[in-house]
Image 1 (tube, rainbow, N blue to C red):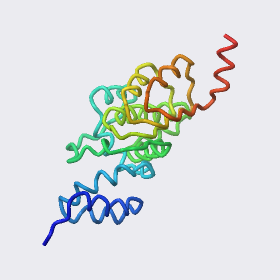
Image 2 (cartoon, rainbow, N blue to C red):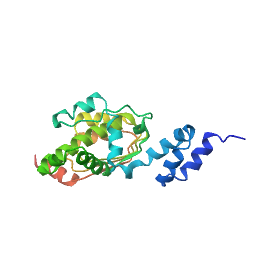
Image 3 (cartoon, helix red, strand yellow):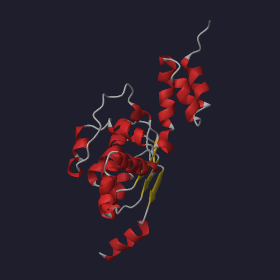
Image 4 (cartoon, rainbow, N blue to C red):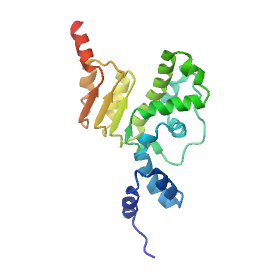
Length: 209
């Protein structure tokens, strides 16, 4: 029997890239198919970020620095064995579903009271986990093309952002950012679309200073 080359398998499985269940079933057939399908699945995972189990897997990819930033929030991270694949290296998009997934993960792991005790506490907790996860995605994924960020960015985050040479679309919301920081972000030569929430109000505030 003639064995199909990987290129053929990739083309075949790409036809099912929006059929998550079918791809997952194919993934279980054998190791060869698994190695081909995992990158396809995770490249289209953006609408599954609200799943607490997926967030759990992503948290396993945090390095020491990204974990340390969560210590003040007393968040106990999963300590399972590292996954067989570097799943996060295949991620191409991160959007607002990530916050939903983080909330679901926090609820499931016993942080429900902290989330709903007061709104500020909830926002800080969710944004802290989001920041660590997005910092990790910037570090691990060379395919990350679309990114939505819902927390205040700092110089360190901007430097990590500029190191990524794949991002073409960036949306910063719930954010206050200075014109100097915008200029720094625009140094990313692959960026073709930058969307800023409250950009007009920010410009007015700068003129009033």
